Each structure stands twice: as C-alpha cells, then as structure tokens.
Amino acid sequence: MKSNHESTDSIPFSPVPAPPDRHPGNPFVGLRVAITGGTSGLGLALVRELLNRGARVAFVARRRDRVEQVGHELPDAHGIVGDVSRKEDIHPITMQIVGGLGGLDVLINNASDLGPMPLKLLADTECEEFERAVATNVFGPFRLTKALLGSLSASAREGRGAVVINVSSDAALNAYARWGAYGASKAALLQLSRIWDEELSHEGVRILSIDPGDMDTPMHAAAVPDADRSTLKPAEVAACELGDAVAAALLRRPIVQEVFA
Amino acid sequence: MIVANQPVQRPSNAKVLMVDARGSIKHHVRSELVNLFRPGDVVVANDAATLPASLSGRHGRTGRSIEVRLAARASLDEVSQFSAVVFGEGDFRTRTESRAEPPTLNPGDQLELGPLQASVVRLLNHPRFILMRFAGSSREIWEGLARHGRPIQYSHVPTPLAVWDTWTPIAGPPVAFEPPSAGFALDWKMVASMSARKIRFGTITHAAGLSSTGDPQLDALLPFAEPYRIPRSTASMIEHAQASRGRIIAIGTTVVRALEHTAAIFNGFVPPGERLATQRLGASSRLRIVDAILSGTHERGSSHYELLRSFVDDETLNRIDQELNAHHYRTHEFGDSVFLEKADKQMQSADQPSVAA
View 1 (cartoon, rainbow over the protein chains, first blue to last red):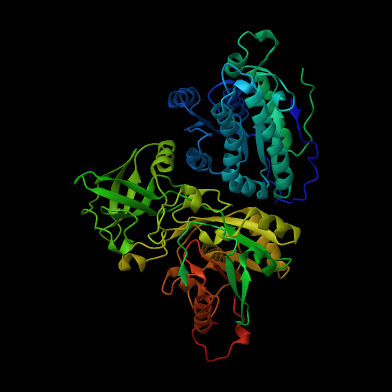
View 2 (view 1 turned 60 degrees about the horizontal axis):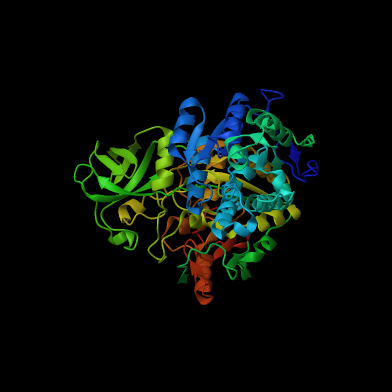
C-alpha cells in the first residue's frame, strides 16, 4: 500500500473534541462512507469490508441490475445508480449519498476507466477514448469531491474526521507502454489529490491518493487477460489494507508505508 | 435596483453595501467581504444544499398536469411527508402569480410525479397547499427526488437553473427548498482567509422553505416553520465568542432565524441540537445573538425584508433602498449583498418607535 502523503500531523485545525468514543479503537462504528464503482472488484470488496467494520456505507455504480443485486446481498448498504463520468449525475449522486447517510465522513473515489480495451499505444488511442478515461478518473472524482466538500468539512469541524481516498495506480508514476490513457489520467488524479490535500489541510479534510497494488479483479483481467492470477493480490486483502489506511487517516497517524512488489 | 437575471453566483464585480452600527453607509466590493469581519468574530452560514423541489406530474383523479413544489418538512430527517404548493399547467416562464390553478385537491388523491408516487394527506387551510406523503422506501424517495426533481425556477432568470446553480460552495445536507442564497457570496478562499485572520467559520443546517408561492394568502404565512440543526462545533464557537465579546455574523436570514429561535428558548444561550423555527422576526424582535447579517437585497414586504427590520430602523432601511437604487445594485438570489451591523440602540434618538428596545 502506497500513500503519497506523509505530513499528516501538521494541521493547524481545531475541531471540537470528538464525541465520547463508545467503540475505542474502532473508528468505523457509525462512520458514513461512500464508495464509487462499488459493485465489483476492489469497490465491492470495500463495501463488504467497511460494512463489516461497522461503517454505514453508500455505494455508487452505473448498472441498475448490479446495484440491485449488491443491494439484495448487502441490505444494509445504500445502493445508488449513477455514472461519475457524467456531469449531470454528480448532484443526484451527492444528494442520495448525503440524504441517505445523513452526512459524509469518508469518500472513496474508486470507479476507474482503463481507456481503450484492449489497451493501445497512445498513438493508436482515439481522443474520445482518452476523454472517457479522464472523465471517469479525473473529472468524476473532482466533481464528486467538490459537491461533497460542504458535507466533508462540516464533518471535520464536528471532530468526526473527513477523508477522501482517490484510488491510484503505479501507472500514475511509471511509464508503462499501452497504459497511456489510464496512466496519464491517474497521474492527473495523483497531482490533484496532492494539491487539494495541501489546500484543504486547514479545513481538516484529507485528500489521499492510494495505490492498492495489482489486484485480482475483473478490471485487471480485462487489461491483462493472460496475467498469472497467483501473483495478484486478492481484492479482499487490498480492501482490508485500504480500510486500515482510512483508519490511520482518521486517527491522524502517518500511514504505514508498504513496499509494493 | 436591477434584477439579477443570470445564475452567476460570484460575479467578479459583485458589490456589498455596508451599514455600521451607527447607521452610516459605505459601498464595498464583495470579493473583499472578509475585510468587514474582525479577528474574534464568528461567521455562521447555512450549509443546506437545495433540493430540486419542483416535481412535475399528473393528478391521478383528473389526469391533469400539475407541478408540485415541496415547501417544508417537519424535521431534517423526514423524507416521506412534506407540505407542498400545487400549481396547474404551465411552467416557470409564467410568473407564479399568473399560474393556472390546479384541479381541486382532496385527501387521498394520488399524485404521479415521474417515478414517485404520492398521495394528498390533507389540505393545509388552503385549496392548493397540501400535506403530502410519498410511497416507497427512503432510498426510493431520495432517488426519485434526485433524478426527477428540478430546481424551483425564477421567472426573472431567463435560462432554467441547473441544480449546481442552486448550491452554495459549502452546501451539504440536501434539505432546503430554495437556496440559502446569501451563501453564494462565500467561496473556499474566503473560508481559508478567515481562519488565517482568526475569524472562526461555522455552519448550521436550516431547511430554508419556499420564498414565494404566488398567492397573497399563502405568502402571508411565510416563512413556514423550518427545522434546523446547530452542530456542536458552531455552538461552541458561539459560546466562546459570547465570552470574549466577539461578534456573531449571520450569513443569511435563515441563520438569524435559527440562532435567535434557540436563544429565545434557552434564555440567550445556544446549545447544539435540532429544533423547529416557528417565529417570525421583524421590527419588534429583540436580537440576542446575532450582531450583523450578510444578506441579499430584498423587496419591501417580503419576509426577508421584515427580518432586516430587526437589525436597523425604517429610516435606515429607506436610506439603504435609495443607495441600492442610486448605485445600481442587483436584487434577487444571484444579486449583490448588504452587510448590516445591528443598530446600536444608544446611538439612536428616542423618537424612533419603530425600533423596539
């Protein structure tokens, strides 16, 4: 698990003391969390993981049948149909998240677009394919976070903590051939996270970019169909690590660095 | 005044007219609003996001087209039951005053509003003001409102408002029926610069209701009872300011209504919690908490204008109106602002009975 931010303890911000902790050591009890791309892969594993830890979870995905299927399996989760790459969907999604959960403490921007499938060299990538990746991987998290910032900063002032996790990739840092649309858009998301975190530190809102590593998910299978699955991290393991990262951010501890293999 | 007819929340040339406690008037650019605040002040805004409260649909019994405008609710967590004003055929391009009457509404009538099903619970002392109840789970109702609802439109704004036009930058819980528009003056840079200057910024959540129904009888009932929540952090900021003689500055009339409602119950204290504001503020109201207000420019006779009379006397309000006209201020939701410090009563002569002690 890689985090791009280390200076977590220098926040000149003084919320009211947190309410009495009825569950010491478990910051997830009653925590209000929204997860995009929540019906498959890491997103679905996160919905399960955070529900298990005691959080109240809303999840967003494009396909109604999948949202209903997950909602049937996990009746405590609040399913929302919406596409973060569409500008018109952002406020309806936001309203359902904040209305359904009564506020928001943690947003996990997990929905991602790989770009052209199968992966292509940049020179073969259509502009529209690149635009679609940027719409999902950059503008989606930007718009959704911006629309939810009022709720997140209110949560920070109340001492509940406020954390946005933008799910990143090592393709944001390393130049992998044929990963141009995805890698370039994830690099933009990484820099967006770093700048926004800097700007919002005085509001007590953390914006973190986290790379969960190569996971055994439908998305990875689509990108690398012949991958040796035994070398990939199960989504459940990544979700558990990401849950720990959220807990660390909420408790304002530096996140433990792991070397990504 | 000029009608602000574009949904531009923060035009770079927005203005603010300031009236100090002695009644003297100055003009400022609104981008420098933070200069009107002082270290130790607490600035409180309403962080309600605006519901798309206009729902088009059909009246089941007659099949006629209707528009339902959600107007108020009993608590911030209520999602099933709303009071609402019903209009007949037509849309926002017609002034509310000239809209067609809806069909006769009876308890039990079904209202088909896109994906939402609702029924009339009862009439609220007026043929087109109803208590209504949505069918379905809260998840279904939220989805229906979010996808089918449209922001309440203004006939003076020629292009339809999108939802994002009606949300202030700090918008959080979607509980307001019209925008808490004084908050359009805020941006995150201003919030950051407040904390750099030791000016504390807090929020309340107040479900601002409809500002106009197009019916004089109904408008006379405004504002409706409005639920609000004062969070612990804001209550603590106010308590600290009271102890250290810092000022409490309200961004908008809804903040005044909420804080003064709580203070009236708790004898000048403002504990956190959710309550229902029922009072109307006007010339005879005594303000216990709020020292100054940032507000839009409001038309004489509106409930917002009445509330400003609790800050300054009628002579000052007349002078404000003259200045707003002379300096071409823009009125309505997307217009310019006024910043009024509560009149220092000792400064005023004894022959101004319109100001209550």
